[in-house]
Length: 416
Ligand SMILES: N[C@@H](CCC(=O)N[C@@H](CS)C(=O)NCC(=O)O)C(=O)O
Figure 1 (spheres, protein in one colour):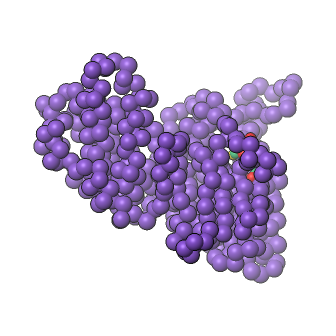
Figure 2 (cartoon, helix red, strand yellow):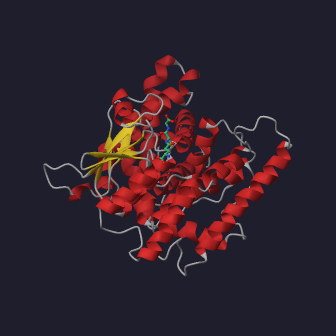
Figure 3 (cartoon, helix red, strand yellow):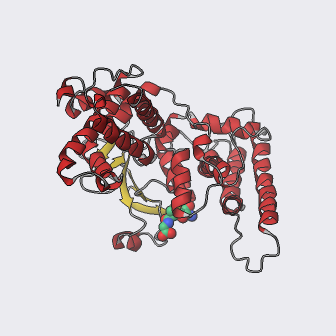
């Protein structure tokens, strides 16, 4: 096509972007998902040796308990291999291996450990680097007590009950739905009050003097709740003036480099609630203030560009098969359609690499009604399809969506 000259090939786009990103992944040919994020510290493993830990986690990277373990591994800079377990169709070898059949599980130097809390404590015991428990015995006892409270003190149960407005096992509901919700909200707020008080015990940002396993135990729930509750319950944790320390804590954890690699994002968290728990939103999550505070947005853009350039064939197939594009186009034009999708995605990768200078004026595709229409479908579909951290990190996904939106806005501002 005539605009081949202005948009680089996929090979070129990958060649420019990949060496500049520090995030690591592997392509899983013909498997779903088509990529998997790798440990950031695999280069510490000597040639011919295996990483000391194998992490068994869910394929979609939705599991909050797996996130805890992944986060701790990255914080402690422990290299690990990943085995993805499809929870919808667990392999027999996994259910034979792990008594509960649940994820996460790990093998540490060949020894199986399961249950996220047990795994965190075992990692701490066996890997002394970057400690995540206080050295002082008294402080350590406090931390262990808080970990136990997080695990067994009813926080998660109450949080889920409030999110779902449902009390399991209660058959003869005496309260109206509204009364129940208000009651759950009060009980949930009492738990948040406890956390706010705990945060006031130390001068820093964290639940103990320094960042620790206590923070890792709580963050997976609070992060999800701060995305879900505004959309499903009209309740806000982020920006809630009642919880200044909790908000400061969320921000501090959000900025930790290890968390940037493993955290999910609001979009993904809300999609999971809709799809898995069939919960009905009461407001649109597009109104949420973006939960984005990357340390380096250029890194995020390059990661998104490299990920797309490395995986473009699967992405194009996904758009062709699942965006609905095939339902109204002539079968004879499928090759042309695929070419337009390819071009719009390369335009996206190029825009991610170039930063903010978007110039579509000399681009032939957008001077053509059909090209713009196909590009619009492709980009609208794919910007909503990105799932975090399964497909890319939260920062990269943010930049990916912003860049797609910028191109979409430009498409129809060019007259043809
Ligand atoms: N208490 C466990 C909970 C783990 C858990 O519930 N994992 C879920 C995924 S989020 C799971 O494996 N579900 C599969 C199943 O229920 O079969 C832990 O902390 O590790």
